[in-house]
Image (cartoon, rainbow, N blue to C red; front, side, top):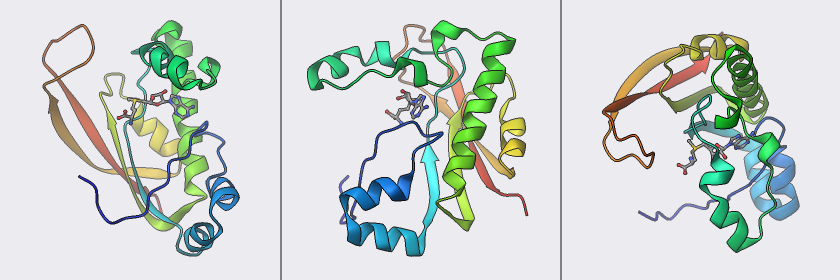
Length: 163
Ligand SMILES: C[S@@+](CC[C@H](N)C(=O)[O-])C[C@H]1O[C@@H](n2cnc3c(N)ncnc32)[C@H](O)[C@@H]1O
């Protein structure tokens, strides 16, 4: 449902994107407000290790809109599998995302991340990012887009700064 809020969509590699710098290029008033107030939190559904090739899943969109493909920047793509190397690179990737985002967040930020963490990687990711998992909510997933329609539930991790 649309609300009376101002919203902006930035695209980029979340490990390195300069959020305030990108806003400054587009909207000075919003940039000044964002820089002064900083960002209160994140709600995200990150990719999971070796599950989906998102560039392939959304290939039609790249084609229709003429977006430039950046397959090599995908964190945890299916084609890299779920082996040890893939998991280590996934942990490093998501840790880098959180460390990058922290620069733009208030000190008492709230982060909610949706994941089906079957390899129990999020405790280490939180540690790498100087964060702690303060709560885990379970959410059953009833309508899946993947071919496998088996019963499935995922966790929403609530993270905060480790002080
Ligand atoms: C589980 S999906 C969630 C997508 C979106 N939140 C939604 O509900 O449609 C994960 C998304 O993360 C994107 N992604 C993977 N690596 C990324 C990166 N390095 N920077 C930004 N996004 C990335 C994938 O392309 C995919 O679109």
